[in-house]
Amino acid sequence: MADIKKLKVSLESLIERSGKIMIFPHRQADFDAVASSLGMSLIATEFHVSNHVFIGDTASSLDHGVQIMRSEAKAYFPIINLDEYGVESKGVDLNILCDVNKPQLLLKEINPESLPVEQMVIIDHHMKDKETFEGAAIEHIDPTASSASEIITQLLLAYKMEIPEKLANYLLAGIRLDTNRTGNYSEGTSDTVTALLKRGASVEEADSYFIESFKSDCRVFSLVTRAKFLKNNVGIILAPTNRIYSSDELAKAANQLLKYANASYVIGKVGKGIIRVSARSRSMINIAALMQQIGGGGRPTAAAADFPGSTIEEVAKTIKKVLVPQHAINE
Ligand SMILES: [Mn+2]
Image 1 (tube, rainbow, N blue to C red):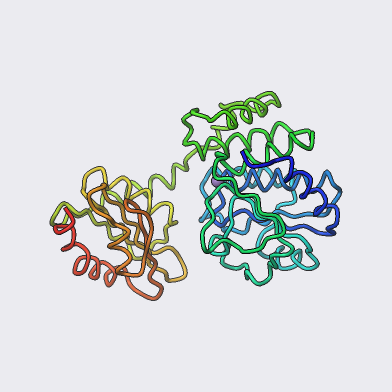
Image 2 (image 1 turned 90 degrees about the vertical axis):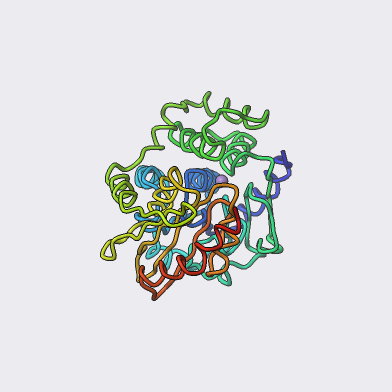
């Protein structure tokens, strides 16, 4: 565990010198990003500093459960949307990033140049790399922590601040998300979870946010029924051209399709004329390497690419012509 005591002292003095604070989770905020940001907001509020949490994602780009958490938390926390950010970002003299450490993962509407590093705090558990903001006033990046929620909980405990039951459940949901709800915790995580349970959180309550949208799942199922199987048992789905999906729905359809195929490609419209491909593979094929050839990227078994201004048919053609033949070579 990185040094929470040191963080406590340096953060306190920085917050106390600030007049207005803006708190940012990563884009497509998840439970961990939201909960850690709300915890940070509580800290700023306890120090009597005006603050806002900017969660600017549209509802369709957020997970169903995160939408529920966001609308519920609005009653207790200063959460603002994109329009309000335009107004409230004026006069901010401290920006705090939670669960994120690089400009690429912030909401696209945020200009990284509007976030000077000398007025920036980074609290994260994702590894640093060459894209990480360089030179932040405070940088607390601890990949040994399960989640940003764990770090923020430790910080709240270090300040001896009261953690409301709602927030305790949000933080527990954040920890459970980033530990895949296994309940297998390191010693540090285990202590943190125990502290949250003592403050009224429960696994049942935290897990109640992991609810899926029936409507969205129906859209995913109906996508899967459109599957075609090409050579080398590559599955492909062309979504209806007149419907808009969330990236998450395309990803879920690709995961489903992979049950019946060696690799899967799902092509659909995700809004503003952008065609997106969500691709999955079993471990014998590096799908990220293939997707890089058409301008995408990702991990060896899960990748994606966006095509502004293309049609689903055009993108499907490229995949069939350029990528599908390579599946034979890769096997
Ligand atoms: Mn996280």
